[in-house]
Amino acid sequence: TEYDLVIRAGTVATAVDTFRADVGVSGGRIVALGENLAPGAREIDATGKLVLPGGIETHCHIEQESATGAMTADDYYSGSVSAAFGGNTSFVPFAAQHRGQSVRDVLETYDRRAAPKSVIDYSYHLIVSDPTETVLKEELPEAFERGITSFKVFLTYDKMVVDDRQFLDILATAKDHGALTMVHAENNGMIKWMVERLLAGGNDAPRYHATSHPAAAEVEAIGRGIQFASYIDAPLLFVHVSTPAGAGLIADAQMAGQRIYGETCPQYLFLTRQDLDRPGAEGAKFCCSPPLRDEATQVALWRYLRNGTLGLWSSDHAPYRFDESGKLSAGPNPAFNQVANGMPGIEMRLPLLFSEGVRKGRITLNDFVALSASNAARLFGMSDRKGSIAIGLDADIAIWDPTLEWRVSQAEMHDNMDYTPFDAMEMTGRPVTIISRGEVIVDGGELKAERGRGNFVKRAPFGIASLSHEMPAELDPARNFRAKIL
Ligand code: URP
Ligand code: ZN
Ligand code: ZN
Ligand code: ZN
Image (cartoon, rainbow, N blue to C red):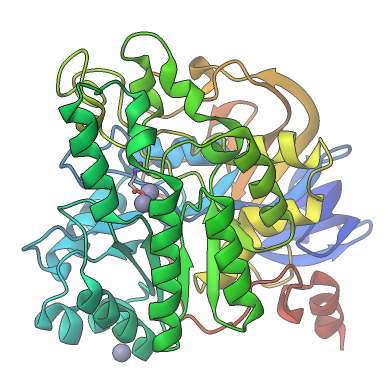
């Protein structure tokens, strides 16, 4: 046989093209795209299916201590398994430096957590909360050298927040080494001020979580971040953008030529702050930061996704169970400010975008591929290996049944959670076969992957200036095909 694997007669889609082709895989890479390829040792019939790049999830909290100290419910095994069932073949969770910790120790800890367990390829973004001289001058440069080319900073949460000077130090250090800074943009003072007033008035139900994190807190911090990045001409990515006004500032900065990027997440498109009003403490399941907004926000955020202002679509999977280990650690009826922030969704990110986006005509299939994998690969230094269906890239492939109808329930999920915020939603389309470096890791609802098979991905420095829906030529499979022949 000519190939290790041939995926036959599917509809292949990249961020720019949709075409019928067989995909030939050997040595873990895509080696041929064409009609009637020679036989493979293994054959997969993809007639009537979509053959898409495996998803790259770049915002998730796995086996991580949160800003309040709580440990996430998913480790690198359950987190990566759930990601795989959701159509992903790579993920980039956070390695979090808490104050007083050395970055070296943090990265060693995460290597110990990830390497023996992950079933998909992985890297980390480093959360920096304590930018000492040693961290800035020695440890961050070391992290770049080993291929960790993105950092996250927080402008809120007392235990993680950086001040203006520290923010500039981190932005400048990242810029010097070709790394991308990511920022959780909410104004800490505004939130704390309102939390105090609400609690003083006896208003401590989950719904006040949203009241205490107003849109203005996000818009202020996004505006500030844009000014800081512009001041020293550093690239900056705003994660989990939840306000139309904030997205508007990002669009303006992009139009002005700044290297400013934006991400949004399913919770802001499919849930609203009304979900915080569920009976008893159930609203705690929906406490995340930034908080859920309203229906007008959903409409506007779809627009910003479609036009490319928000080029990243991530789950912000931050799994805390609805019990004493997680959401209810402060008691059965916790005050809103004592609830661990975040919700699960790593397995729902792509099905939701496909069903509600592609199937309902809000975005194209090519937009879907851009948002699920290609943009992330490019922005986070992985596009030499991942993020498209093209000759020479890793054979990281998700085969989707675009017509399969199903209903969301926690019983369908593979994470270590006890609820899904998207319960009972009716979905069309689902990933059915997941292939990582040529190996089938999920098939027919079953896990085929061995624990720890995932590899650490050494990422390239940040280099590409724009994040439009136009892909660079190297991600165009037709061009690669020709290059191979010539
Ligand atoms: O509420 C959230 N999103 N928790 C996770 C931590 C973060 O801010 O991203
Ligand atoms: Zn260096
Ligand atoms: Zn955040
Ligand atoms: Zn997050």
